[in-house]
Image (cartoon, rainbow, N blue to C red):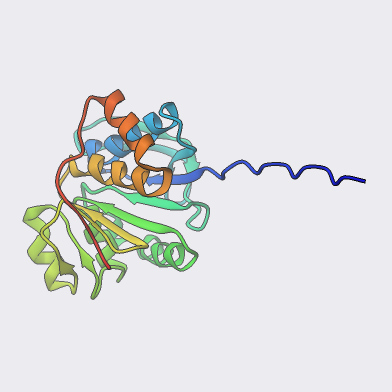
Length: 204
């Protein structure tokens, strides 16, 4: 008797969380959100959720834009966490810093955009590791123990960092390339009429 053919498993979607908070810089968060949203249109398997520490609710962004965030942040419930910049509120929040460490230890790739990288630094995640941030904050990042690289995006495995503001788009495009393939990333570029800028520095 012939065995029944094995069912083909569907690829698991890339689960992305974008951490929102009062003072978050609009472009730092929405640039990556756009990329991951268009990745679905381009054939990628991506699920993106805006999350807020502690509880769902409204946040007021750096330039006054109000965003309703639908979900509370569960640090281990993602494959990729994006931490946008825009303020130092998270740096002063010990619960957030502890949860960033917990997320990375659980296998989540933690990514920082612009001064969001300084939040990762405050959690100890960039100490002794290749990283980058906004050009005005690079000296601070280095003084805190980061191995600062002059690149738009720096990929050190489970730690990915990007320079200032618009580089969040490039970080997200790189992560789509890394996790979903170059064809999906090229599709996103076509939809957005945007070409990824700068070199992605990767650790060997």
